[in-house]
Image (cartoon, rainbow, N blue to C red; front, side):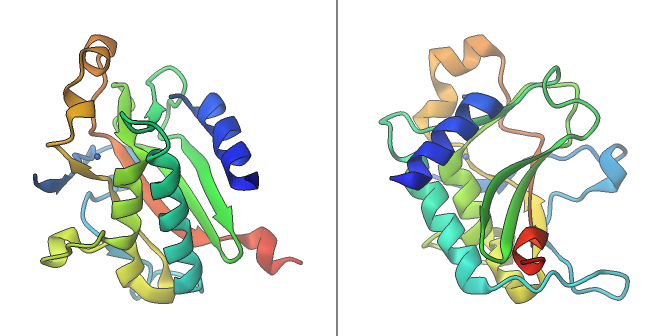
Length: 183
């Protein structure tokens, strides 16, 4: 499948989230990014005009990619490879560009793609605004820290602990895929 090849390449390039909670985001660095859901529809914002169906599709694809292995696939952003509030493209589809921003630049952050998908679409068990995904921003796009499933055994594995990874420090952004609009 074409998307699997894209994900495999992305995973090689970028490194290999019971209760969900937003990860911590550094309050002073990275332009004061908030861990809470932020929609780009405020007074000084630029709505992104993303198609909510495209956003839902992206979340579905990221979830499927993450589930291709028993232990789940991780997006890892290390202090060395993602310094200075680096933003990496993790998926593009029609009107949507999904970025991961490393906001705790002094730590090695690693989150499951399954949790990135939940951050985008809210998952199937949305119970309150705290767990609302970026899809709730409708066509405006938005950002929030990854909703990490702290109960997932992958975060407690010996390999994860030995690597010194933290599930904190990654912010997901859903913005317009300008290349799509420039066609």
